[in-house]
Image 1 (cartoon, rainbow, N blue to C red):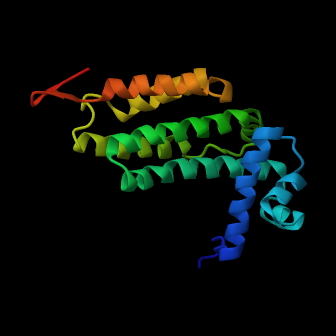
Image 2 (image 1 turned 45 degrees about the vertical axis):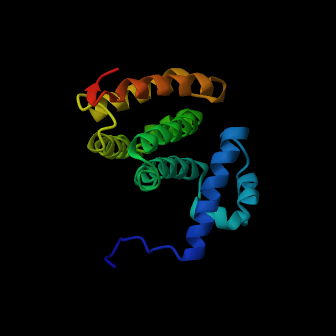
Length: 198
């Protein structure tokens, strides 16, 4: 291990960290970002000392929650492709994208405040998400399930637009309808052996 490289977490410490991050998403979503950190520790089933050892400040916890949400979203792409046909995997992933955006907008003011201090909570999140979309679309195109004249950046822009206007639990059904409309527009149809566009 080179000097300055973080020491890998033990399995139990890694589990505790994951439990804290999962609990934090739930508590922040239901109670707001000013929720007591002790409430998060209790929901995670760990002591306050464990929480503060992992996340010494509220800002550190919020940034870690955001980064964790991005990681889970991106890791879901290969997992879904391993479980479902490509078109179904893409559709399922777009629902996870809505979950991610809902969590992100719930934290947006705090994330902006963190960014104002010189830290960059966003890091490479846009590139990571675009790579996940690309992998899903490549699999769909290889399977002949979607049109080949649409770029992953087009889908990324469409998803962001839908999320921007329809994020939040109160708009969830509308957002899902808009996602379905967008994805249906990508679908390749066949008629008597001929490929046609919607």
